[in-house]
Image 1 (tube, rainbow, N blue to C red):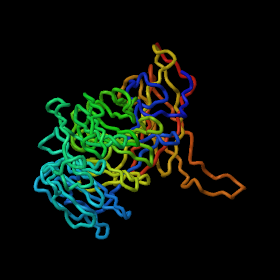
Image 2 (image 1 turned 180 degrees about the horizontal axis):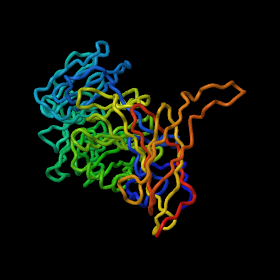
Image 3 (image 1 turned 180 degrees about the vertical axis):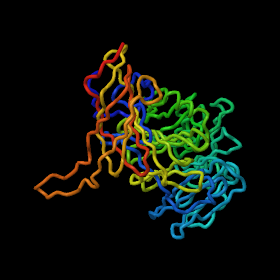
Image 4 (image 1 turned 90 degrees about the vertical axis):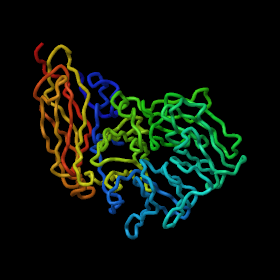
Length: 501
């Protein structure tokens, strides 16, 4: 086999099987990510964003941040029945409303200096900036409003009792839902365009002027301006949609969404007869993730953008308490990481400081932080898995004498477990735990214009291999608390040792 020197990783590939993958892809980057320096890094951890627990440890089902004209902001949080705002001076969560009935989702939308929130069961609420409590949304709004969006100076809503109707308020007045006319209120009847049994699951904006109504098996796109009589359908698509209110993400002139087949993208033009929908997830979304998305519901299926890293971050629940975070790098056009976390993730949110937050079932909001190396004190288990590398003769059992890799760490007493797996065996045929060097600081001791810095922080490590097979795959693992690891590259020797036929 030719010398395998990998200086450019292309992320994770799960569509090709592990035995026939291109060499510049990796089979898995578990709890790690492909960095902009083209290295594989153990992922950073998270900590509590707010020290105060909400609602005696109730499960937090949504989180919202209102940004006011004066530059201030208000953070809203919701459990099944309670909605509160954060008082940083106390600090504590001040309840502004308690719904009479519990709900699995509470939706939020901001209009000027007011925030609407609703639960699909009780009267929708309106909270004004600085208010100690909310009040019923006036103007004969849908009494069981379950979804609300602001678009083109109107409020748009879905009533839980009428899943085919989209109601909208008077232009410029979110508390008038009855006045008629081109500037008035009304509703769009979607029933004629959909199969029976479907219902609107999410509403979002596409390319600024379009409003997309997502059902589970349909997407209906309207061209919405300020004149009600000019509202018109731009496109209807079947056999695609979402099943979660948090499964859509406006992004520039595009709109990403998670249907039960795979994540998809509306393109920024409606010039063609058919709305162009492309799967931007080439390389990862095989049957495993398709089956996980299919049938999922609730806000735990969610998608967010993380501009600090040029990432699209997707959460897919696996069980009632666990899930997978998949990371798409839109600059690399690659899947760059697959994460598991140590707490239940209910919803994700990017705040005005570009912090990636998530809410959990224990009454806390958590913040991912690049300076943290644990999940609120819990160990992060990092593993990088290569494809299978075949020998010179597929009929012969052969072995590589060693594998070399370049690694870096910023923590002392850090090790990497290097394992080799032969053919399709589940147990490692070769295993070695390698200690990484750390000098304490890369800026150690040197005199300017006299000597070099005493350490680069990088070293080449070699793991000698035992065992043999027709094909070999490798894993690099670190399962130590509060440790940092970065794999820069690895290589295999140019020749391999032949075995027996």
